Each structure stands twice: as C-alpha cells, then as structure tokens.
Image 1 (cartoon, rainbow, N blue to C red):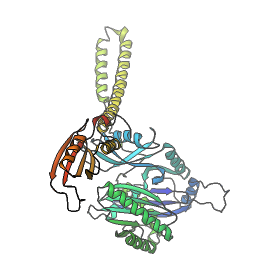
Image 2 (image 1 turned 90 degrees about the vertical axis):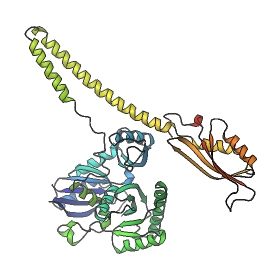
Image 3 (image 1 turned 180 degrees about the vertical axis):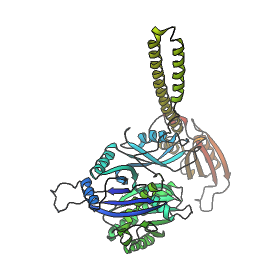
Image 4 (image 1 turned 60 degrees about the vertical axis):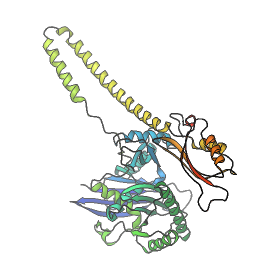
Length: 493
C-alpha cells in the first residue's frame, strides 16, 4: 500500500503524520507540526492560508502528492445521541437521518451524516451517536487539501480516531468504562468508551493549556466531573472507572495526580507512539507534544490495517443498494429482440415503431419502480417513527393533573413517583403515606376519575420507622397516563 498522510489543523497549528504498510506492519515515517500563526505579529496582517503553509512544509520534506486522512474536531460538527425504534442495521441509516433532521438544530438535507451504533439488538429500540457536517465545511477542507497537493481520502471524527488508537494498543479485554482525555492546547476531547465502543463525546474549551496553567488544570478537572456525571446518568448509574491522559511527560504526570486527588478516580497515562514502528529521525526524537498526535496515528493505523473508521463523513453509512435488476431487463430485452426478429419477415414495416415503443415502456417501468420503491421506504420510516412516538405522554401535563387531583398533604403524602413509558403504555407509579382509610378512599376516587385507571399494588398497616407521625398507612398505586393527553401523532418535541 502506498504512503498515506494523516492531517488536522486549526488556527494555531497543523499536525501531520505520514506512514506506510510494510507487509503486516505499519511504519511511521514522519510526525511534525506546522505553525498556522502569522510570521510577524500584528492585527492587520492577512490570515494564514493553511493550504499554502502545508504545501511549503511538505515540499521542504520532499513529499509529493499523497492521499490524506483528515481529522475534524467536535466544534465543526453537530453531534447528538439519538433514539429510534427497533430496526435492522440495513434500515438504520434512513431512520437515523430522518430523526436527525427533526432533532438537530441546523442540519439540512444536503449535510453529510454518519453515526456510531450503541445498541446492537435490532429487536430493541436503537441508540446511536450521530454526527453531521455541513457541505460548506467539507468543501473548505477539500480546497485546503488541494492547495497543499493532497487528495482527501477520509474525513474522520477526531475523538473516535484517538479512541481507536487507545483500544488498539491498550484494550485488556475487560468491559470497563474509561474516559480518554486528548489535550490539544486550550481544548480537550473527552471520549467515554466501554471496551472498544465509543458511547459519549464532548470537547471542552479551557482558559489555557492545562499542562502549563494551574487554573486551566482546575477547569479541566471540573469538565471531567461534569462529563462523568452525564455518562453516569446516561448509563443508568454506571460510573467511569478510570481516566486516561494522552501523553506521558512530567506535566501529564502532575496533571494525572491532580485529577486523581480531585475526582477520586484513577488516572492513567497513554503514550500514542508506544509500540509503533518509528522510522528514521522520528525513532530518535518524537514531536514536541506527542499526545496531540493520537487521533492522527489512530486513523492512519486503521486505514493501513483495513479497518473502517467509526465515523467517516466522506463515506457515511448508507442503506445497502438493492440487487440490480439489469439482468432481468437484459433477459426481457433479449427475448423481445428474438421475437421481433422472428416476425420481422412479416411485419418489416412496423419493426422500428414496435422496438421504439418497447424501449420507451421499459424505461418508464424502470423509472416508476425506482420512484415507488423510494416513496415506500420513506413512508415506512415515517410510519414507524410516528407509531413509536404516538403512545408517549406529555409528562408536565400529567404532573399538573396529579398535583391538582391529589388530596391535601394533611391527609396524604407522596414518598416516591416514577414516570415511564414501555410496551404497555405510559404510566405513573406512586408510593403514598395516608393518615386514615378514609384518605385512601378519597385518593382512589380522585385518581380513578376521567380517562385514568389505577391498580393497587399492596398496603401495610404501618409506615417505615422514619415516616412522619400520624401517617398509619402506606400504599402503592399505578396510574395510567390519560389518552387524551397523549402526544399527537407526528408531533415534534
């Protein structure tokens, strides 16, 4: 396989890694950064053209035209976790795009969309981590690469590429929840993985480089705490078990100790270049900030080993193409040709007209079949999603009804309230303390009015030891959500 170049850039610098396959091994030949700041200080200087600056740096190192793998950061895309109804993998691309168009803030029909499946069971509701990028952003990347003498081959989400490198080199087979921290100057990619699967991505802006600034290090610890809380809520209480910093220098060691002290979570260090076949000068001296090259090394190794990236905006997941019908049409055309040839002796004068009509009709059939197929796919997706959402309830309306209906606190007290929606519909599970059996009767009468239904799950004569004095009954009720308050079919949140 020829040499490949992995690349990313921002307003401060560009980072480049060059490698090639050597049999089953991958040799890393170059790893360097290129400044994107103006050569001289001043506010009135024109902005640096990243394509020209990269072209000069590559020419100085004797590199010709190469295919480029480009990493793109979280700040240049829209990223969101989406939930869709149960669906096989072949149907998932259309359903994810349909849901993304409804829930993403700025996404349009022509945006590139790719996703990482989180749930694998097609018989259960599917959850995906979806990412979308505007076509203008892709065109800007293409122009920059063209100016640098490069041909974009893939456009990869940066945090996923760094996670791939870590999993390739460090995965120990245990399904642990780990938080990978890739520090890139004044921002940090925060990527949570379980085993080899990315389930959560954030990019945090920091006041400065946390490796060199104490205040920025404290800000990073706060961002890590917020990320772990969000992941714990998403995973139903499961906690992040360890934090991994990309980099092994003394500043990374100090930052890891600070994180361990502030968050009480073990912090590990990860050298992106460890175990790789480094060639020439790179083997003697690594670049100044080795940790920042983790995404580039990750996507370069994936490509040279034939492993597709988790997210690739140039080659996003799509519904598999249907089996070609060309052989069928070819066979029909051949049969028609034989028939026409057989009767040509008798109806030579009509041969041209009949052949033309057959060709026109076949073309119309092909076009109509394709259009009907596309319309049926779209209708199927819309019907499934609307059916999924139609049974949900407006929980704020249900809480208002419950608050208005419930007897006064002098008679009853709510200790627990669970609201959920499953295959049986939307319902509320309520645990209540009551002062008397009369209060229980009033409660059942109030909750059973209108279009709500209740069932009793049990009663005991005395409440738990720490309950307020005077409440002699504890009971549980399940109240179904009112059908007249269900979401209208197709209603967007």
